[in-house]
Length: 329
Ligand SMILES: NC(=O)c1ccc[n+]([C@@H]2O[C@H](COP(=O)([O-])OP(=O)(O)OC[C@H]3O[C@@H](n4cnc5c(N)ncnc54)[C@H](OP(=O)(O)O)[C@@H]3O)[C@@H](O)[C@H]2O)c1
Image (cartoon, rainbow, N blue to C red; front, side, top):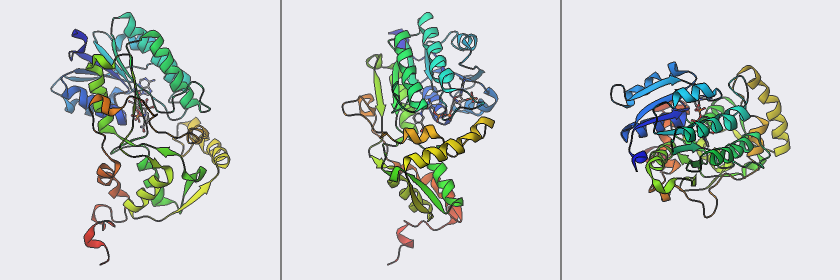
């Protein structure tokens, strides 16, 4: 099939944490890549991941159908990575998650672009209590209604240099005497490496078997929220208290802390994020996953030390608490 041969792919949201790795993987596979984002000026560094002219950032806001139409001109495939963690001047969940994704799928369908990979999230569910999960779920339905050949990838939390999860709590541990153990820290996660997610996109986009399928992407191990925080503290040699907070109290805290989002300041926590923590974030039994795309999942401990060292006192020159030479005899 000609549509599985690398040609021109438009990557919406290609300048973010996951998108950067996706663009790199697609360029390596031989695609010419259009990186469609609202601030292409911030995506210029991506060009060095390909040959001269292979990667081209273009201005596009997916909430504007004319922008999407222009960004997909000449494309043979598309990827959508646009996602918000909180609502604010940077966008609204319904517009960015549902309307934007539907516009991309409908435009692909209108132009005969069958290969579209959409990055959703474990927890995407049109019936979710959290607006993030609900709008991610509704987006999946809208996409498959418009373009049944689309592939949906749902990662658990994604880790890697520049991630928003481990870095956030490691950074908090350098400043705060306590870290919040929301709901007692029992929520389960299956952290997945950003490089594996990028490889999954690159493989799904050329695989005829992946058309119309949904994959849930998780790492090799299930971790509780408390396990992850404990691991971060050990790796950064920090010792704030892990303070259990009931979900209802954290939700109230999130409602207040989330107010900073209204002026565009990323909140430490939002009520919506607390609601997402009420449900485990792990691969469902029987779901298709990384292995079905021929990818062996990379463990958290193999990667996280390479970027968590900067949160230790003394940074790269600090003693590694787990280095055998520094352990007591
Ligand atoms: N990170 C995780 O742990 C994780 C876990 C599960 C699922 N996911 C999903 O994976 C996807 C990527 O996540 P990420 O962490 O890489 O996000 P990110 O770093 O925040 O990147 C978001 C990207 O989307 C672009 N963008 C935002 N609004 C846009 C719009 N209206 N039109 C065009 N581009 C827009 C941003 O660039 P501009 O601001 O310049 O437009 C940026 O390139 C999201 O869908 C997210 O929900 C992430």
